[in-house]
Amino acid sequence: MGDRRRDTSLVHVQGRAVETLDIVVERRINGAGSHDPQAYPCNELIVMVGGQALVERSGEGVDERCLARAGTGWTGPAGFLEKAVLSDPIDCVHLCLPSGLIDRSAERDFEVDASKVELAFAGGFNDRFVNEVAQALWGLSEQPAHSTDRLFVEGLTAALVAHVVKHYTIDRWKPKAVPRAVDSRRLKQVVDYIEANLVESLALEELAAQACLSPFHFSRLFKEATGTSPLRYVTDRRVEAAKVALTSEDSSLIDIALDHGFGSLDHFIRVFRRSTGETPARYRRQALG
Image (tube, rainbow, N blue to C red; front, side, top):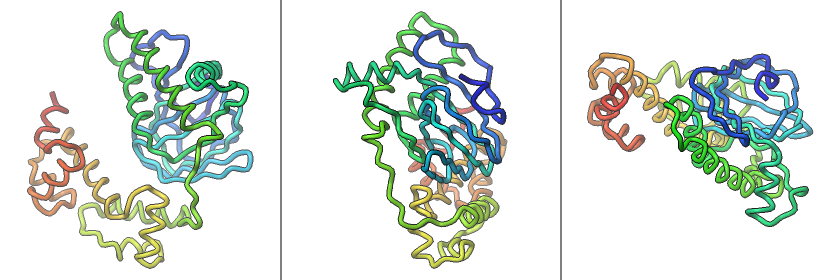
């Protein structure tokens, strides 16, 4: 299922395979640029774990666009012919599910005719349960083998498939209605501006000017496109950048705070703890072991 998916994808082969008949887990770097139309060889759940990009997917009369970052998810129904355009590479975990899995769950867990159950072409969602399962399954491949691995995988797979049938089949998936959207070029310009100026004090009016929109309309359209407000997005990006600095630099906490636009150490600690549940110092100790 893997190498046939995309020529522009790089499959991670580190770690070990967990033997199970029901699911294939791959870590992929999906390359930037336009991907020629290809059909999904199986039902897939895709969860982004790294990077940031504007992602546009289309196929069979459906168009979809989102600003993707860690936690963004997509489905790929078996046989669905999809064309994708990515502004930047994205690091994703792909969960490949044979069709029989969904059929069995439909009949066993929901008592519905499996022939009437079909995975929807869904995307741009952030599903905490799917994210946690993807992280757990991929993380297992990087741990020493244990006699309970197969039971662990089978339990997670059964729960995941039931969740998919409940939320992501064509009769249950309800994409958000978006009457108007900020175009990809303007959105990317704003995102690039934010990334280049994280250390600065960024006001809503300043970001709206980058998109050539009023603050009111910009704020609404940005939230529709990303799922979060512009200023919350800025804060989240500062926290993510600070996480990298905490684990890869010897800088003091106050230097990291000032270098990432927090203004003071107290503000950095307060925002970081609200976002992660931990103080920066504790996060650094845990990350560095």
